[in-house]
Image 1: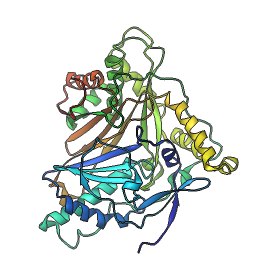
Image 2: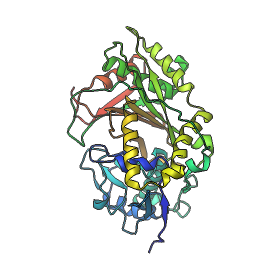
Image 3: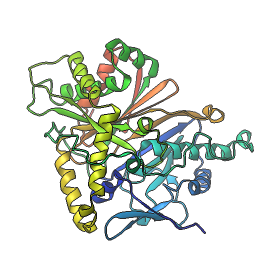
Image 4: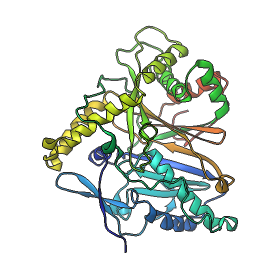
Length: 422
């Protein structure tokens, strides 16, 4: 029998159960492609073995008088099954043994889909890697060695709330809510969306980013912004800016190893006020926009403002239903300030005994209010995978994105889930 413990939601997590619904699941995916087809029964066994080590995943969500909270889930691990829906579908805990994540597979791919209240992409990748290691040990006799039959030395089980550990009181609001361009088109049926993935030569993109004098992250955000400018606005001026949410992993800035959420969001802003812009001009504005925001002091201000609201004694005394109303109003107001989201989860590294069995990793985001197009990036080995998800059928923005990469001489291969307009 499991020891029962309870835990507070971290500062970022408090919003997600308030706004989650069928059409806005707040579920994201991290996935690994192996070099062989997946055995579903062994994957279930691997999940059963790994889950008890991870307190953050081994929880069910409860509704309290003042806040939502987590409590140890005493039920068996959720049922692993072959993928049979669109990615990142809403997770109904009542159909999932009360868990807030799911594990599915398709051919050679293992999918971990996570309700964002549990953790961010960095925490999810830790869990996915350990699940994959355990699966490979069950699958391959040569990996059944005593020294491997334990969690990796690089895997953190830290579950502190790093927002509370690092925030400074009396922080002022560090962001604005100016209305932004919204990418519109013919919408998919609720719960469905298009996926376009580019498998990109990492050395090529490093070379190109260096030639422009920018980081890889700045380059990708710049191409994403330019694709919206050319693909949706058709290169025309707009009274509203193209504003891209860029989540920033806070762990390196504050020496944290938490498996909970710990990120802040900055906005990469481009204002197309004149008649025509070159890609270099757009990229320059994005570089300047990100450079002015991504430093420790500004990131600290961003999350400290949100935490200070959570710690306010008057607000804490409000019952949950009143907090929910306030959070919904604040969210829907701020949603108008965002065109899309692009998250870069960086380099995924695996322990050496398992590298020969793994082909690639990727991440994928679900849709949210006002944002019909999102991107997620991660790299493994010599390949960077860019995954674009969109709630509209028109392909103008993805086409503009990959055309710019090709124009810059970057080698890539493209896959889609086949539901968008050609």
